[in-house]
Length: 329
Ligand SMILES: NC(=O)c1ccc[n+]([C@@H]2O[C@H](COP(=O)([O-])OP(=O)(O)OC[C@H]3O[C@@H](n4cnc5c(N)ncnc54)[C@H](O)[C@@H]3O)[C@@H](O)[C@H]2O)c1
Image (cartoon, rainbow, N blue to C red; front, top):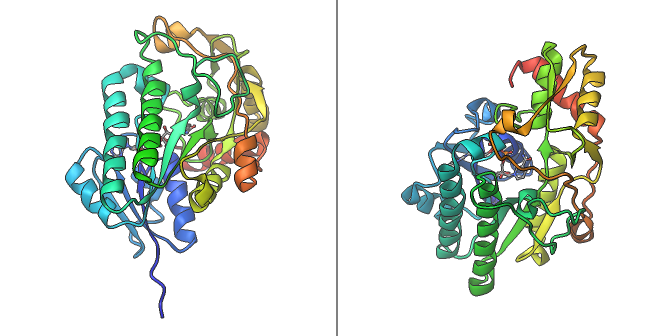
């Protein structure tokens, strides 16, 4: 007897992480449908998949509830990634940010429950921790945010509302879902156009322009490779005890943004100078940032044995190779 392929729906599947996820799901024998409005996603990201008999692309918005109803009904499980992302987009358009993230996720939850409790991955973010100094962040850490007059925090708050709604569905209806709080995830296909730091630095370094560090550059971050991250997402989705739980997914290799700029410069052999730009100039008056952002990954390590495998230098090489080859930014 021929075994039916598992049907998987990926919202935001033409995006950076979504497109890599689709490739991995197809490689493991799934039949993948995506819905993406191409607001920040790109058709080039899914070009290798278009035309395959096990891949279906709906260029549409997750706010189209009629279409979403059909897609969710016809699927076995859902990875929900569609969201407004990028600090620049969030600061420029907080209404669309809040609406897409909160109403979009509400739709996905409601329909997943309505059509027989479809298994669901909710993509959350390290931004939910805000600017708490209590770092590394464990999943139970307090959230510390700035005032609502600073639109930068709207993304953090909207994603936190998603988490509340998801946990409420799990507790009230048994909807099987897992929440992944992704920390900075990087790799080929990530665009630097909306404020993402690594592709922006690499692009600047390759073209000999100044590498622009926002703030004083002492702020630290960690970066994990997209293939490591999607490996964790898929394993968590397959792991039934993870349902109803929240997991950090990220790297513990902490680096200051100035060190990152220096690494990019060295690895690309660039002669670009490194310059510093104030947050006010980069993002406008009153922008706030956090000094450190590092995950505690002991929970996800215990659950599925996750450890990021790709070192930062290798990630930078991969990103630089991709930008040099495709000319994309
Ligand atoms: N990249 C990171 O470092 C990171 C970190 C934390 C969380 N995340 C989360 O991971 C997910 C994917 O992010 P990404 O980095 O791949 O960014 P991305 O912008 O490449 O992906 C988001 C995708 O959602 C699509 N989209 C947006 N609004 C939509 C709508 N209304 N209907 C349909 N599609 C819509 C976009 O076109 C895009 O393809 C997001 O939920 C994001 O919040 C990413």
